[in-house]
Image 1 (cartoon, rainbow, N blue to C red):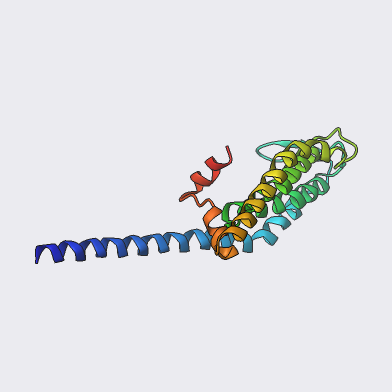
Image 2 (image 1 turned 90 degrees about the vertical axis):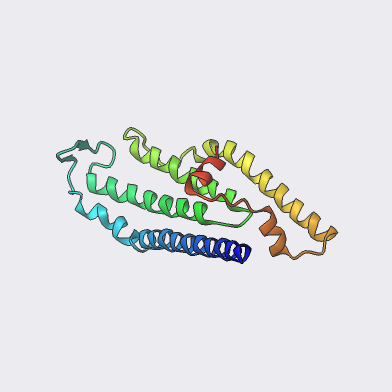
Amino acid sequence: MNNKQQVSKSQELKSLDKVNKSKTNVIYGSIIATIIALTPLLFNAYVSVPDQKIWNTYFFTYNSEYYQSAFVMAWTLMSKLIPLLLMFIWIFTCRHWWYHAILIPIGMFIYQIIVILDDDLSFADQNEMLVLLPVMIIIIPSIYLVRARIFNRINSVNKSTQELEDELTFRPKSLWGKIKQYF
């Protein structure tokens, strides 16, 4: 009788863990969905910036040398920040084996934001390929090697592509685990 109670308690604890995990997943999913749904509003935040060369706020003063308007600079910056935000959401929620390829457009958007913030630069997107080349040299061959490994196993083992993809997918349990995997 005592053994049955222990088994039922352990099963009850496992089911509670599953319920807590699913509640956590629902909360995280809701936060991510809300952020994605709010991206049009976040993008339109540039509308609150005045169409002036010098923008004074309580926190800072911005002088737009290159764009000659803080409004234009804010619009340009938002057109890079919002896709970057969506790329970060995508890379942290993607479960496919090729998700490292998302690092290339993330690097591109980060470089473009740096160029936008550099007031003395006259042409944006000028040497972007030279900056992204080291990232691409590492990521593209690694993706090809993972792909070759998958197709090698498909030819030698009777597993479906989805089973092999699941086998090769790295799934950290927390957001911090996903961040640590990149460094």
